[in-house]
Image 1 (cartoon, one colour):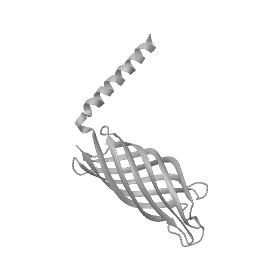
Image 2 (cartoon, one colour; image 1 turned 90 degrees about the vertical axis):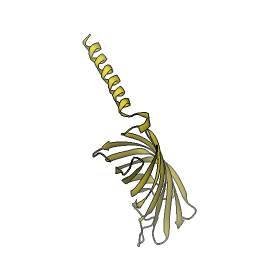
Image 3 (cartoon, one colour; image 1 turned 180 degrees about the vertical axis):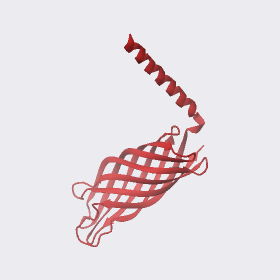
Image 4 (cartoon, one colour; image 1 turned 180 degrees about the horizontal axis):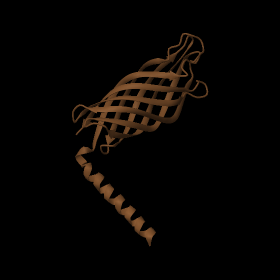
Length: 188
């Protein structure tokens, strides 16, 4: 009988917590958003050949769209141009699609920190000694960031995101770290 009462109490707490969350997030707070960003990609281990000089840091560009379920959770899809890494006689460029879940935590009234966890499909293309070599693969992506809401419709983000394991059998695996500054627009 004691287990039944504690189980019933846990179920009642869950029901009331869900109702409280639903009241906290009126349908008007749920919305679609879109945005874009620019940043710097850093490829590791980097250059496709061991010969110096090596350029493993290049601009990266991103376009994204998402749906904010409530103040804490969002779902997002994005296309990212990863940039390029190049050595003396070889180069690798990349791009990819991703789908992520974002969990945010407000730290001040208009500023929140967030974490990202998702999956990506990356495509890398070789040049120089890797000419005519293309690789595509899937993997996990994750990141951390800060978002500031400037108005109810406009926000800015500073985010670090990782795309591990880009590459494959003919082009060496790379981990890509991207530091990006983005802006987003909420459709209300």
